[in-house]
Length: 320
Image 1: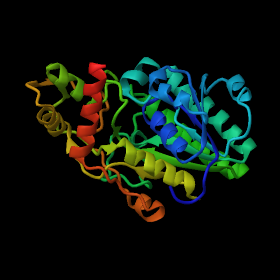
Image 2 (image 1 turned 60 degrees about the vertical axis):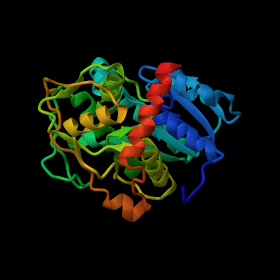
Image 3 (image 1 turned 180 degrees about the vertical axis):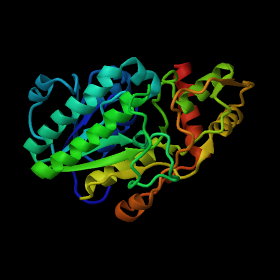
Image 4 (image 1 turned 30 degrees about the vertical axis):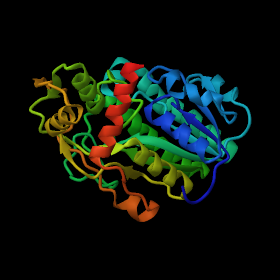
């Protein structure tokens, strides 16, 4: 991580998938880390080993609760706002909570950032582009989002949060940035969270059919979690406001992904096609030119290595 160093960081949603990796990486740089999470979709097991670290503190609290923010002692120099249900299974189950953390949670995080004169990074998403009509998607693309569809609670939560960050920066001069994270995979994902990689791996290891939506022709550009963390922290350490896309650059169909996971696991599982969800994006691939030019970032973990690491983690977790 180049640029500025951080000494005391707050990660909301720090017991979640990406958040727990961020906590680990920040601790490795020598920073003290406070992880704030209500465990609605995160897991205390994701950070259990970190609690033996003198520089780590776990706080079970909701980012939408003003009292939780008032109770956090000391001063932070970095606030990473990653609290939000991120998989369709979760945000469809928690629609109001998803909207609240994007609005009230972001506002409280920004107010604390301003008070502490800290650096702020909002975890936004490729979902702000909706089912894109421009491909690949640059940060200048405004998106094609259904504001009243079933995915809208997540899409619009993040779009509102981006607008709030932009307004806060304009009115108060808050040192705030936006990262648009594309589909990320790796260890500590939940097998049943509804996203393609963990779902396919869990099904393959169980010998169950891999459930591919539609005809499987829709594409994603997946990024291994270590590379995503590199990008987030590179943005944090820079003076860039964003938005900046962070994501993989190798586009793959969901059918090809399922077949690849079957091969890598040595599974005898078959493919079963299921109904495609409403508003499921047809194609998704980030234009990462800004990340390359402004942050010096590009993904470094290739498909086979990243999937092997993830499959190995799922295998060891199942055996534990």
